Image (cartoon, rainbow, N blue to C red; front, side, top):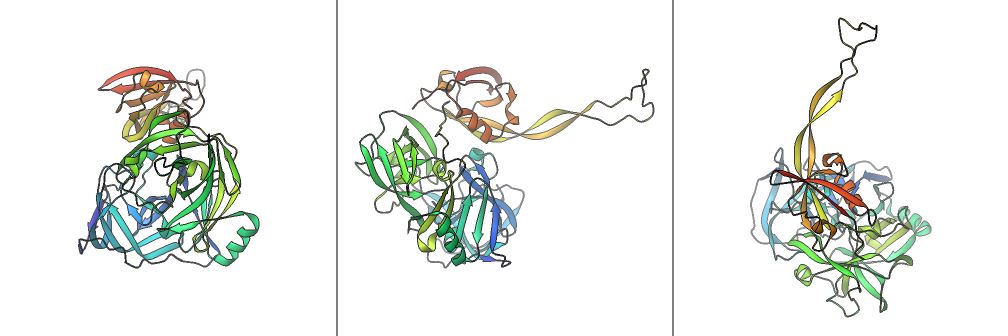
Length: 441
């Protein structure tokens, strides 16, 4: 972990009344454009915190800016630090943390010199291994509160418009407006959810920090019921631990007139949401698997979003048909042979008057390792004998380190009956396994 140099330890209690700063622009040039990486339906943006380059998850589902997952190679200076306790989704109750004020946070030519940061101390709270690149923190409300923010999933870029009134007028003419409410610093929308018993309106958190299409809390309302077909699954990890629940298909999901047929919904267990301060009438969330099908514009000040169909709008809804959860398990040194095309000095020609070339040399590179974090009971992966902590050596004849984590995720969601051949290592012994992806829904 990157060392946190804490210059001043002050109060021991939590105080959320500290006035946050606002983002400013270095140059008035109309707009600020921030490129992002889109991995497993999550938006990862580059940021500088007190001068140190990092990667943050853009998450409308969090109130404050949170820091975690740092390397040990650099120092980040923090001032005005106090101890706090954090809670969120997961089965545990609280995790320890720190709060720091007067930090400088920068995105391209946008900066805030008075930013408050919450620091998670739990070393195991780490998104990076599940995303495949370093992810050091999360930002939410503070990024959106005073800006008009356009998220273009097709071009993988975020645009913050400096002239808010001009941008608002443009989008109101070209895109579909949808009312939202901002409650506890988070955006909520009312969508139509249709299950086997018919449609109903559901108040949902707009959650760019969720990879799934829809989450529904079946214990919060009699309207929400489990579909006839579902399976138990690992849904993710929150601030307070791992989240488990069920997955099944809805009949239809409609957001501001935009209809989606048979999206996949997750139904988290009650223990996973018991520590969450839910706003009144909230029944779940709408996440990245739906949101990525639009170009979206957030306008918190006027309590509205604007929507336009994107390239992924008509795509089918897929899920992991293997039962395997894979994570980035660190780095390994790999010896690779590299061809050389340089001519030899001295005797450049052989006996047949052909120019002689040096052929190869060895190079050592750091490559990713991938490990199994969980195996769904009753899944093809479990039937094939795969176990938690197995390390992947190859997939379908290709060395595992030549894949990105996103490519592995896409492969395991690709198509029913697709054969997957894996070589894994367990306790120092290599084993070959194979299975076929199977529809569960």
